[in-house]
Image: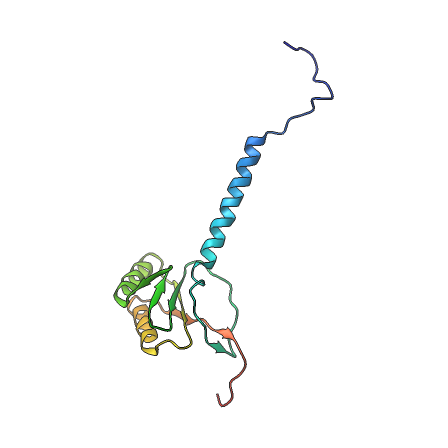
Length: 142
């Protein structure tokens, strides 16, 4: 058994277990936030351009509804039909009143399907609806 003062060679030990815990928790936090921020925008959609398009910050409670060129509706990386979308929007508006829906429609998508999505939002009492566009040149004759 060793009694006395610690020598200068030993020094103080840094506890490694709490340090490793903090590093892993930070890593998990950044991985989960980066996955959810890109999930809705990974769908292969060519957005239309608009001269009045503005880049907006991502807000909490926004729902991205993706409309592909073939008319399929994608919500949270899952293909849904109009009835299922209506059911989901009704539940969302019930739990989160005042929510926002952003429709990311392909520039060659069917207008009838976009109007059906707008109708689903209206029936779910969601009034804050917008269309995603890319900034572009002003079009002649418009």
